[in-house]
Length: 622
Image 1 (cartoon, one colour):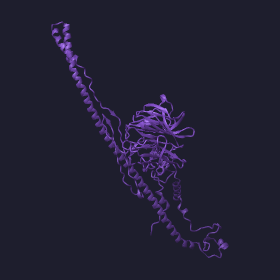
Image 2 (cartoon, rainbow, N blue to C red; image 1 turned 90 degrees about the vertical axis):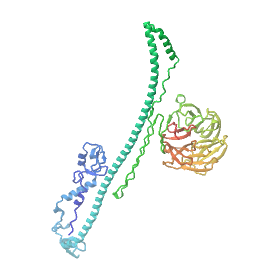
Image 3 (cartoon, rainbow, N blue to C red; image 1 turned 120 degrees about the vertical axis):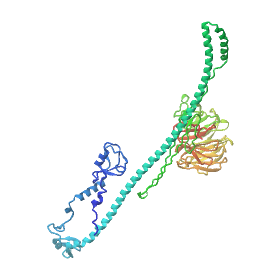
Image 4 (cartoon, rainbow, N blue to C red; image 1 turned 90 degrees about the horizontal axis):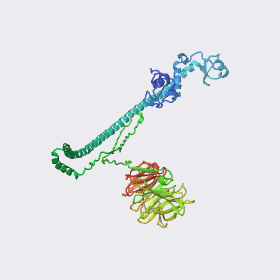
C-alpha cells in the first residue's frame, strides 16, 4: 500500500524555516540580496556592525536608518507561516468532521439522514417533506460512501499537482544556491585576476625603478668623479705655490741667508702660475627625473553565462601595462590607439577686457596659425581677432570692422595668400553675412556680402587657385540644407559644392595639401571629401561614440602627411584619421567642448573651447 502523502506543513516547513534559528519565520525581513530571515535573528547577527554580511551569500548589507526593523517585510511568507502554524496546532479532533450528529442548516434540531439525488444536497426529514418528497433519495451514509472514491481521486490529483509545485520550489532553491556559489566563485576570480595584474604592474614598476636608480647612481658617480679629478689637479698646483710662498715667508721673517736663494725659486713658481688660468668648473649633467610615469591597466572579464542555472562560462582576464619614463633624456615610446601623453598649454577664460586682461574670450570659435607661428583666434562675441604666440603669450588684437563703425561677429578665420586673413561672420541689425579680408594687423583689405542666415559659417582658402571656400546652411532648423560656396576674392561665385550628397549643416571646412575639400557635417555626423574641382570622392564617420564614429563634428584640419584631424564635439574629443578616412586614434579627450582646430607649420595643434572660453595648444599631438 502506498505511503500517505505528506501534509502541507511537512512540505512547506523547510521552505518556511529561517536558516539562522531553524524555526518558522517570525516577522520575516528581506535583505537586498533576496534572502529572508527572522527580524530578531538578523538583529542578533548584525549586532553593532554596519554594514553586515548576509548569512547565506556574504553580500554586504547596509541597513536603513531604522536598523534591521526598517528592512522590508515579506508579507507572503508571514501569511504562509501563520497558516502553517494554525494547521500544525489545530487539534486533530477538530480537523476531522464527525460521521454522526450532522445537523441540518435549515432545521438545526433535525439530523441529516437523507441525500436528494435530484438536488444533490443532504436533507433532513422536514426538508424532505417540505421540498423533496417527490425527489429520488438515498441514505446520507450511502451517499458519503459513493462519493468517497471520486473525492479521493481528486485529492490524489491535487496532491500530485502540489508535489509538482513543491519540486519547482525546491528547484528554485537549488538554483538560488548555484547562483550564490557562482557569484562567490566569480568574485574570487575577479579578485585573483586583479591581484595578479596589480602584482605584475608593481613588479614592472619596481624593475623600472631599479633601472632608473641604477642610471642615476652611475651618472652621479661619473659627475662626482669628474669634479674630484678637477679638484685634485687644482690642489696639486695650490700645494706647490703655497709651499713656495710659505718657505720664502719664513726665511724673510728669520732674515736668513737662504732668502736670497729662495727668491729665484719664488720668481719661477709665481711666474709659472701667473699665466695659468683657473679652470672653469667641469660641466656635469646631473640625473633629472620627470615624474611622467603612465601605467595602463586593462582587465577584461569574459561574459558569465548560467544556462539553466547550472553552469557558468570561464572568466578570462587580460592585463596590459606600459610605463613611459624620462630620465637624462632617455624615454620609452608608447604607441597605441588611445590618447598618448602630451604637453598641453591652456589659456583664456570668460571676459571681454583688453590690456592686462588680454586673452579673455567670449565664445572663441575659429582659429588659424600663420607660417611664423602666430595664432589668430576668432573671439566671436567680443567681435575681435586675438593674436598669440604658440606659447600662449598675447601679442595683439584688432576689432572685426566691416566698414565704418559697422562690426562683425566672427565665426571663422583662415590664413590666405601673402599672410592675409579671411574672416566670415554676421553683423548689423539684420544679421547680414560678410566675408572680409584683413591684413595681419587688422586693416580691412576687401569684403563681399554673403546670404543672410542664422547658421554658423566656416572659411578656408585654396591658395593654389586663389579661391575662398565658405560653408552655408539655409532652410528651416528642422530641415536644413548645407553646401560649400566657392568664391573668387572679389566675391564672384565660382561654383557650389555638395548639393547632391545630402549635407545639412556644415560649419567648418579645410583644404588639404592636394587641394581636396573636407567638410564635417554636424547633423549627419559625417565628413564629406571632394576633389579640387568639387567632385565628390567619399565620406566617413557616422553617428556614434565608437572608434571612427562622430557626434556633432565641428573643426577640421590636416597635417603635412595628409592625415585628417576632426573635432568630435559631441563626444568631447579630437580624432585622427588617415587620408582615406580610416580611424587611427584619439588625439585628446582632455577638452570639454572642443570647437575649432588648426595645425601649426611647426606641428603644434591649436583647439578652441567655445563653451569654456579657452584655447588649448598641444605641442606633440600628431
